[in-house]
Image (cartoon, rainbow, N blue to C red):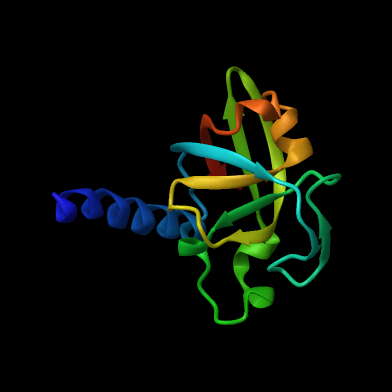
Length: 127
């Protein structure tokens, strides 16, 4: 059973990584949670996830040893939930996120759903 569960995750990671670098990203069906940390994000800039519109991309998508130089730091993620769509810049890495999960800042999440919900099913794509 364990190997059966790992195969879709590996395939999803490979598909998302190819989207990042091919420039033709297709939507990913996944989930989103929110966070409100402040400090330096993975892209090397100051962030405040309690007040800024931003997203932390799954760790599996980062391709360079120094995330400050990663191509993801020059991209955004378009997120759709319940008929609402937002586009937020990638400013951070989510080390605990699977390849189909993103972590939105609190204001970004709140623009889609009540933060009390915690986790929502979304579609998202790198743009």
